[in-house]
Each structure stands twice: as structure tokens, then as C-alpha cells.
Amino acid sequence: MNEKIDSKVDEIIRELEEKGEVINALNDRVFKSLFTDDNMRGILSYIISYVTEIDKDYIYENMYVTESYESVHNIKEKENTHDLKVEVGSNVITLEMNQFNSRETRFRNSAHFHESIVKKLERAKTKEDIGRVIQISFDGKVGYSSDLISSIMMMDLKNHIIDSSEENFIKYKINLSKLRKIDYNVSKLSRFERILLLMMESKKSKLKSLAKGDKELELMVKKVEDMSKDPNMVRYINDENLKRIAYEMDMEESNKKGHEQAKIEIVKKLVLQNVDINTISKATGLSLKEIEEIKK
Image (cartoon, rainbow, N blue to C red; front, side, top):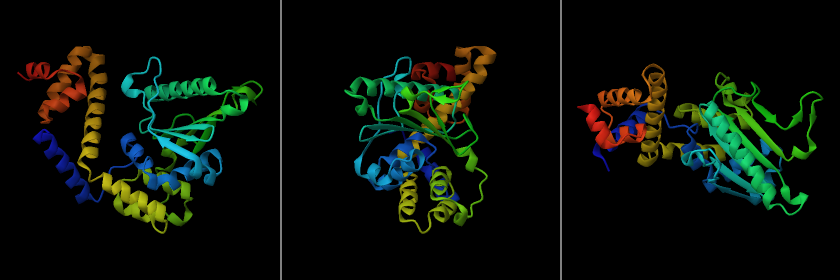
């Protein structure tokens, strides 16, 4: 393990502790780790039930939760993983955390959704076997609608009639940005709103206030606090943030100088920030040898 990386991770953990903060569940890795934990089964059942109106107890007793790899044509291999896949009886429900809600993310989610439909239809022996294919997306930025929860189905747009052959297939969008300026008076918040805010919040004091009096929510806060002290989790998120910085810098520089020259500029900037060479390699896709040549 590289000492510089370990030192950076230790520094991030110390800073979080000093500021009274945690890493929040807007990051897909945190989101996955949180809701694949069997202790969160009750909260996950509640979320799915609240959004889809499927009976909560039925979900709790029958659901199977996993991180799912689905091969989808024209989607990069590393992007082929749903955040969460939940099977409840004949229903398939995928949950996606979209912190930045980019065009690429929306395209990927749509591809996953339609691939899930195709596979479900292929496996169904009778109409009754089809069940429902549902996608629940938690969007960090406003996309489809400004409502907190919106739904999308196939429809005759002129006559506003739902296509009955598609009524088993539905997308739900959770607009997290709707809650960013909400009053933190817990007594006025629904339990669903409290859960969404717990996913978004980084301040320990606010997390404890939101969870107070609800044992499941208090356990959720404890889980997030523990993840914020886990070097492997913090290292992963730090690397992902660097990759995103590199990507954004790459896009900006590419418009000016072309793709290859942009990568050179990115490497130079990351080197000036004393970022470890192995991390730079992960962020840019360049080999260690190429990076050493740029550094000269």
C-alpha cells in the first residue's frame, strides 16, 4: 500500500472528525454499502413501499437484495453495475443513486431499465409471471420533474392514455434537490423526507437531530459514521473524486487543446497538488511511464 495514499486517507479521516462530518450516501459506494447491510432491511423496505405503494411487510419478508451486474450493449463494463437490485416475488426493482444526474448517467440508467425489462420478459412463462420492473432513481440535481417523487410510464401523449401493455414497467424519480433548502424542523418532516435528508447530510449534529427517536434511523447514522472511519471506503471515494476532477478538467481542456494535450495538462496540475503517481494513473488512464515523462 502506498504510504502517500495512506497518509492522505488518514488526513481526510482526521479532517472529517475535526469538522464533525461524515461521508454521505450520495456517493454510490456508500449508498450500496448502506442498503446491502441486512440491518437496513427495514428502511429499504420502507423506501420501496413509500415510492411504489407495494406493501411494506410483503417487501420486508420477500425481498432479496444484491449489487447487480447487468451486461448492456454500448455501456462500459465498469458502468454495468446497478447501485442496488431488489427482487420481491415476481417484481424486479433497481435503485440508482445519481449524485450529479449527468446526461451519461441518465442514458446508462435508461439502458439498464430496458435491459431489465427484456430479461424479465424472456424469463416469464405466463403473463402473470412478468410482475413489475421498477427503477427508482435518487437524483442529486433536478432532471425530469421538480416534484419530490415523479413517475414515468409509456403513454399516448396526445390522448394522455397509459399504454396498458407497458403498465408493469415504471420509473420513479426522487428529486433530492427539492429538499436542499427544507426547514430542518424534524417535527414537520415526514419519515421519508428524514431518510432522504439522512442520505444527503454530512454534518453529524444534523444527522443525529434527523434520526432522534427512530431506532432504525439512528442505526443508519451509526452505519454512515462507521464507514467514514473506514480507510478503504475513504480511499475509494477520494480516488473517485480525483477521477471526476480529472474528467471535468479533461473536458474543459479538450475543448481548447485536444484530448491528448488535455491529459498532459491534467497530469501537471495533479502533480503540483502532490497527488500520488499511482492515483494520477488511475484518474487519467495513463501509464506510470507516461506520467514520469510528463513530469520531466
